[in-house]
Image (cartoon, rainbow, N blue to C red; front, side):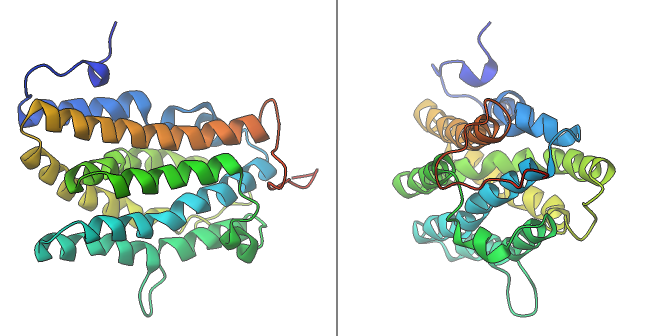
Length: 253
């Protein structure tokens, strides 16, 4: 049976039907369903595998402010730019307040990694680098509202975080609240950002052509996130083929 997310467009959907289609993409394709993510929540990853996840995921965290700056550059609307730039501040931080990137480096350091090595990205897998660059390319090459639609994975992230944080605290004795400081603010930042973006997309995408474009952008973004976990699973779970030059966990990790 064909999924709702993949149903071809013939006529334009109502705004509510479009939202249903977008949310169906998360139900089917968001990386919370990936085997690597499920192993993490079950407490079945070694410390070395957790380190590999944190190190590679930093590459994605690091490009978020860049892709948001690209989206800002596409808009002539000061009101839109004022709202969207909050995302950059959330990740870059501001004077007297650390942002998401610094908190992710704290997470990596708490797992036993050298934060300078993580920040350099030199030990990240080639597949990780290709995936995050694909996201930048998606945003750079798309019209404004299609680029905005690619950010709608934030509709689904609070569920992932609400599962991940308690699971990690319960099942990994080397992880504590300070380790996971990145995630707490995301529980209110992501819904705020998603609500704003969803309203814009629903207001703009009133034709079948536009709706197909925004749905396609969200599917591509989910594929990019999924591909990152595919690479982690292949390298660090099974068959365990770590690419040359990538991070190699200590044998006891």
